[in-house]
Image 1 (cartoon, rainbow, N blue to C red):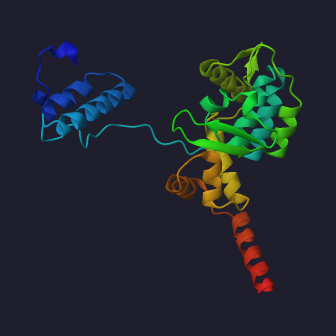
Image 2 (cartoon, rainbow, N blue to C red):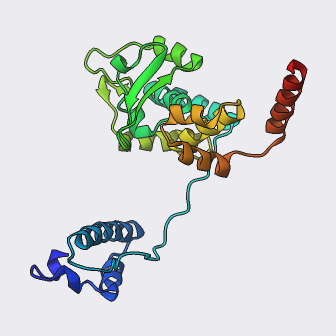
Length: 246
């Protein structure tokens, strides 16, 4: 923006100028970033009375479709089988993702002092939400059987050092390709939420694990939770049990 002119008044950013500036970037993610910066600046400019109209509002930007991928049990088993020939830290990261419903970036930052055996305490880096995530028995057994690094407190380590996200994602995709699975590590967070709902967990209970708000959790489940025979069977079974008790 400074390249347009160091003394350019911000009020000179008309709607046409905003659109031209954003479209000057060739890639979709660059245009989204440029729009986000302009929206923030217009918000501040309106607050201080520099402009009266937010010319960055209501922009029609092409966005990537939201991820709607859910891992199946068979795919989980195939991925874990394909990961046997990789360093064990990839299996550890996968199980943490599968049973904690956290983002990959948070999983890779988890440390041993955060793990009490019964739960993992973490503060999400993106939202700042503090969580105590109970440890699933499968995950607990795996973690308790790991040898801890003498050079790093991080749970997921490679050769005694923390694992960078880009390198982890590269290895994760390599294993997924070997297992012929078209799914990503971040899809495990959504999958964990759906699996908890299928097991009968309530929206507030699921939100207390994933760290989403109640409203966001409800939207995710409304979008991704399949209306299948298994869920219907659970509902009718619980209705019958309630009738017997009353």
